[in-house]
Length: 136
Image (tube, rainbow, N blue to C red; front, side):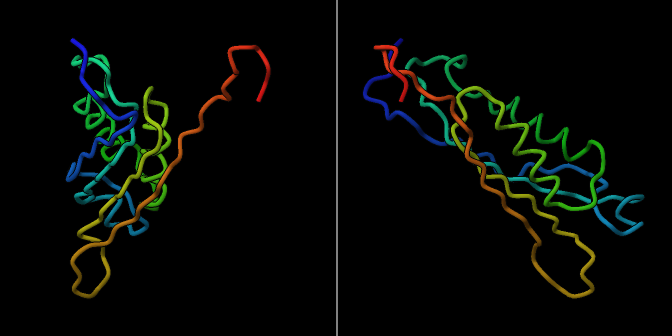
């Protein structure tokens, strides 16, 4: 079934994905771990039909993100954000994405609400070849 009058691109946003991980530089972070929260916004090719196969399965995206949080520990949340962005950038239909990793229980020694890093990733597109066969 066609989707009437749709834009060429749109966004899918998933926020508040929470899982326990062992990322950090302090020994306690590597042994006890803590909660990490991830938000992701993906600019996508907008579906032209009303079918899941025509868009992103955000359940699958969420599971991929959680696997990074619960996977091999890294020292910096900047590295974690980059790993997630690199992984999601390989998803067909993703044009650009932003990943935000929150570390709400970071050991700062002072009261705070949140620590977060955010990375924006353009997804490279292959060069387009005009129908005549000429190169751009």
